[in-house]
Structures are given as structure tokens and as C-alpha cells.
Length: 419
Image 1 (cartoon, rainbow, N blue to C red):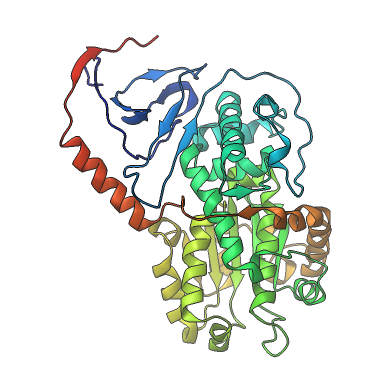
Image 2: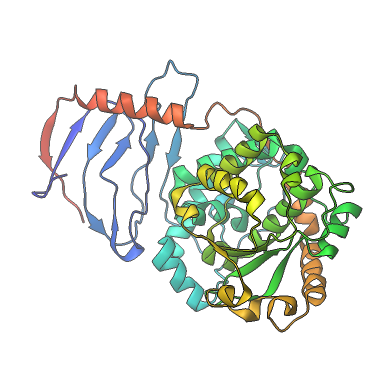
């Protein structure tokens, strides 16, 4: 649609990225390129929250390709029924039929008012957007033959929707990548049990834990001191499990999903020998895939006492992550310098705070135990095929076909009426 209120229509199908909630809910803009089934419609308009527009189907640009990707995005009028408890078992998805309306049952929002305001401003989230996206996400999971036993609990799905600011196709892709990452590296992502003796010992040592206090932005602070990690006693699986247990536990809290996370790491005891825990290829893949697949909003990373011998590893790490995340990393040479950027109250007493580290760790272990069963249940989920995961290569092919297709468009202009 151009500035005169005209739109162009023609009968072709192409793959595009679709963000159904382009702006804040009070003034959303439908993306300029939206693919309807067998039709491309080019339009722009502002409107209040959607009631029940038609189904949008994103078709693969080339049906001959093995990488087929179909997303069904249906905006429905939602009921206000209280959600039933949804559990993940051996064959959860097959227990529902097309006549069940379980996907339209929603829990009331429990976010504090000021966090709801943050979600609205930063993530374009309100009740209407949230319910519509959850319903569509659940239906997509039910119909997707590439996945099995995926948790359809609201809190779990909202991890991905909030990370991708309620772009449903992007959230779906992140879920597929998340499942793929877990299965490609099961030694780090499966069997997330905080009671494993080596894991319990590492947490007790202060290797990684979470402050019970939130920073000035309401974020939980993930603290890593690397102390207690004896290379002769622990291995790369122990290291990976501690990290993923920490992240998965925090993601069960909806406030954390909205506001994101702050990281603090004291790298004083890190030596070049730590790098031998991973092969170069594995290290590079975990960094790159981790950022793309884990539904976390990393807002600030503070690093203290980075040893000169491992700065090359730090530089390599920065080269593998996105420029946005790289810009959020800061290094400090002293505590006084750190305290200028990170509130002392969130740090252990050993780093200028008020609560001793041992007490913080004890409180954190209680959180881990409270979430233990949920983390173990994640192993029920399966990715049966990765053919629908869009990679850099498949995205380049899609964009090429899209441009080529537009060069051949022919059609007519008509007036678009928008209520």
C-alpha cells in the first residue's frame, strides 16, 4: 500500500520474515511485505489490536528445496477461560484433536504493573498480543510433524516470543534451533540435575550462582567467579551443565524473560588451560548457536580481572557473537571501576556488597531445587527433523528468489479499505 491508500496484488508465493506486531499494540503497523496464501499483498496501515483477520500462510520460495518452511499465523478472538494445567509426557501432542480448544485457554498475567509497562514499551506486549501469539504458537506446535512432546505451557512459549518481541515466525525458528542445540550437544543441555555431585560441588564453590537481589533495572545478576573449577577434577560437561542449569532456572521466571539478565564475571583465576576443555570448532559453534537458540535477553556483561594471556580468547568470543551483544560487554581493572556501572548491593560481600557469597549460594540452591523437576522434564522434547530450520544459506536463497520474483510481478492496483 502506498501513501495514497493503494495496494498491489498478484498471484505468487514467496518466503518472507513476518513480524505481526511491528510496533507497540496501541499503534501497530502491519509489515510492508505480508504473504497471503497464493497472493502477495503490499500494504501499510495503523490500527488498534487485531480482532480476527485472515490466516496468513508463509510459503516456501522454492518447493523443490529440501528446506520447506510453512508458518500458519491465525489471529482469533480469545476467551477469558482459566488455563488448564498443561503437562509434558511421552506423547503429549497426540492427545489433542482438532476440535479441542485447549490452545485458547490462558492464565491471567501475573507480571507486576511496572514490568507490564516495560513489556509493552520494549516488547510490544499486551494481553491481546500475548494471547493471540500463544494460541497461534500452540496450534503450530500441534501441527508440526518435525517436533514431539514440546511443552506448550505459556511461560515456556513466552520465553521465545518475548526474546523475539512477539514475532511469531522468529519465535518458532528460535524454538526449533533451541531443540536442535539441545540434541546436537546433549552432554551440556540434557540431564540438567542440580543434585549431580560434581554440579552441586561446583555451585557450592562459587563457580556460578545468581544474586538474590535485582539490579537497578530489575534484572537478576548471574555471577561467575571461576573459582573452585579444578581442571583435574571437573570436565567440560560439568562446566556446561552448571551454565545451562542456571539459565533454564532463571527463564522459568516471567519477570526475567521481560527485563533480561545482567552478568558479572571475575576471571582472575582463569588460565589458558581452560581453553583446552573445548575443541575450537565446538567452542565456536556453542557461542554462535547459543546466542541464536537460547531465549535469553543478555542486557549487560561486566568482566573483572581479565588476564592478559586469555584476552585472545575474549577477542575471539566477541568475534563470534552479534555486534549488539558485543557492545554490551565491558571490562574493568578494579572493583571501584566496576561499582560505577554495577550496583554494589547485587554483589557478594567479597566484592563490595552486603550479603556473603556463601549465603547467596545457599539461597540460589533453594531456587535450583524448586525448579529441578521442570528442568529434567525438558528432556522429553524432541526435534525429529531439522529441515525447516532457516540458516544463513537458506535465508540467502529465499531472499534471492523473493527479489527475482518481484522483478516478474504483474498485477493491478485497487483501493484498500481499512476499518
